[in-house]
Image 1 (cartoon, one colour):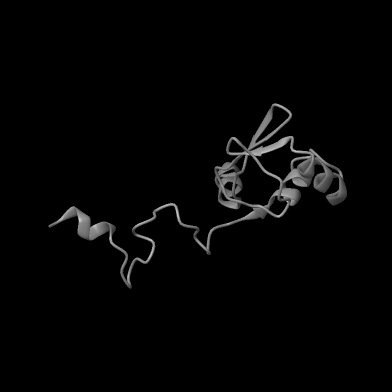
Image 2 (tube, one colour; image 1 turned 30 degrees about the vertical axis):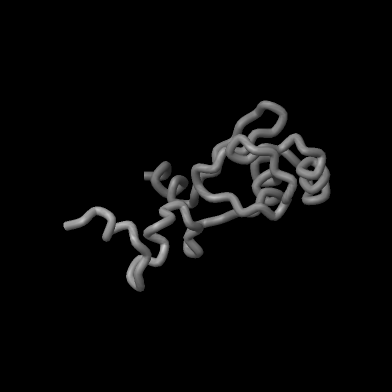
Amino acid sequence: MNLSDETEPNAENPNAENPNAENPNAETIELDQFLKLADVCASGGQAKHLVKSGVVRVNGEVELRRGRKLRPGDRVDVDGEEFIVGSDADDESDES
């Protein structure tokens, strides 16, 4: 078996060449919604202004798009306070 065969895109695995390609079925939350859920902002308007001010980083890079899709494991930093995006599956495992 040739290892290069496993990484070439094909009909069964179109993202084989790029394992980090977006999974359309993965859980996502928009950045502004996440900031409200994490109690960083009280409203969507506050979240919009906070993001546009350039103090929000996602995975270490400044993010200016409030609609940025976040996935479980993404790291959001706001003025030095870090948050890690979880998933509903994380909540379910905590309850058992």
